[in-house]
Length: 561
Image 1 (cartoon, rainbow, N blue to C red):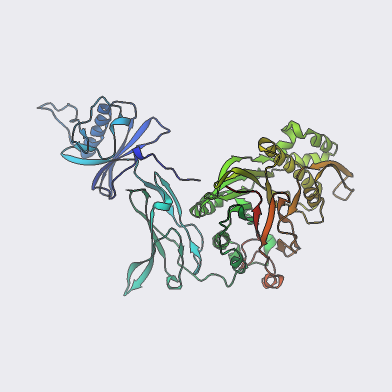
Image 2 (image 1 turned 180 degrees about the horizontal axis):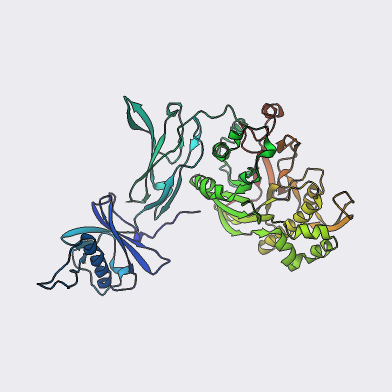
């Protein structure tokens, strides 16, 4: 998720690109170099040369392509089958010719001059370059902040230049008025009905690359009236800068892959990704979070929309897709300036149950119940975890984990087993570091506070006995002995609801932490029920998901420089 930074040796040092250039891409992972000849904005041709081959061979390849393009048959004397004349490469400072026996990788340096057919091309090695720049495929609303999807090579996004323009119509003529010069732009009322244009010039230190422009596909409209999250943003308007403090968000953002039939109370236009994502991005940005755990995060949406935008706000991401037909999964996003990734630990719960020798005591119990065994060994639920290090306190680490348990309300025993597997997985991570590694556990547990899942998570101890009686869907009574080595409690308490749909209202999402390591500073309150009921339930024109985000500010104890 972080952008490539080339070494200074291979960087272009020309503030304004010359008219004629020969651009050298030295890919450190390959044995070839890509040579591109440019005349202004026009690419003449591209040719690949071997890094370790002699400069003579590289210049020969360039000459061959150039004269073939120019359709000029080079001659020597009166011979018509002679080779084209060999160009020369000169030192840009001394004008001395570069030795032809030098390897290409050493011969080509920024500032050298390629003399070819009485023309001179200035060499730029690994100049800053934009790989892609585009507007996200979302609705553009007045008052919302828009961020581009951008990826660069040999450049730093924070140093690059961004210029925003809004279209204007005057006497039938279209013009562009500059309205912003930051990577993010807050859309103004004067932009209503207009389109936006973004121009980006990549940069790394004093080195600039070619500018690229992109124009939004959709005109700007008014968004919905006051959304639920906009009444929560005042609680999160300030970032947490004190060492040891962090803001955590856990949010089931509603996958688009499960169909919208169950939300027939919500007009289809408000269920479209382009509409929901506009609200979701504005919501997440406004929380000024340090850790964001997302559930039901569509793989394509994360890759093409959320990840590129949140990257511009300083987030890195760990993602794992559920092993199922619908490509949605779990994402852990963390503030790169505040935390450094130490390790990632992603697992499929069914694989851990069957393959991990240290959890066979649980697997043996499950084998006694064929129905339970079948479900626990076939469902594709996954768990993600990251061990992070405080950048300002490098000796202090903590683990954050994310989970989405099986949803079917008729099989709480499956969720109970999945919780036991999750606790084992986190225990194994802690064993790799230290017994005092703080752990944060976020997710959609599909379990209410009176459930056995919640009981297991909040009750520390070995050999805990759990019994589930015979029901219409459960042929046998199930008895399990489970353990929990963590002293977890719900950091957001027990709100009245985290999921609000037509046929269910209740709390099934949690952020768990350990009492020994974490103190809660603030819990952002949920929207009031009267406001939600105005739209019947969630999702709605003012809420992008059927769940509500959990948000809390915490202090991690004993974190200091």
